[in-house]
Image 1: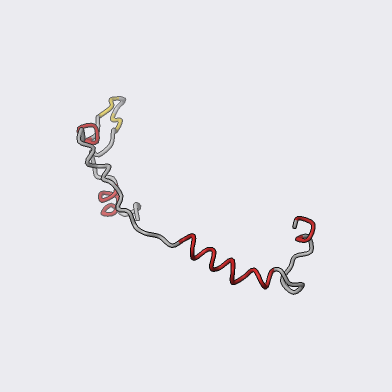
Image 2: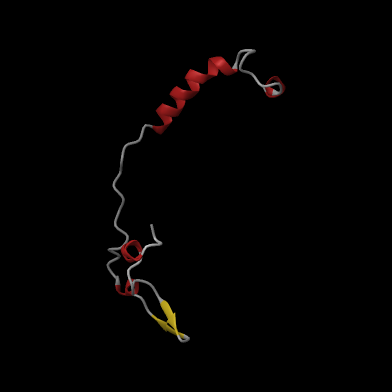
Length: 78
């Protein structure tokens, strides 16, 4: 996405960050952001990752604990 000019200007607009031109550093606009508005807080989104991963584990465990689903070395480490 950042390869096209229009996308690049959305992600990193001209003048947003420091640049070097002919050996001189031109300070970017981010230095003027004293209120830190560029670091807005993330919204908290509830996630069920633990529950879904436990569900998948519980669904697959019976297969992997049978002779059909086990790997040759698994009994060495149980």
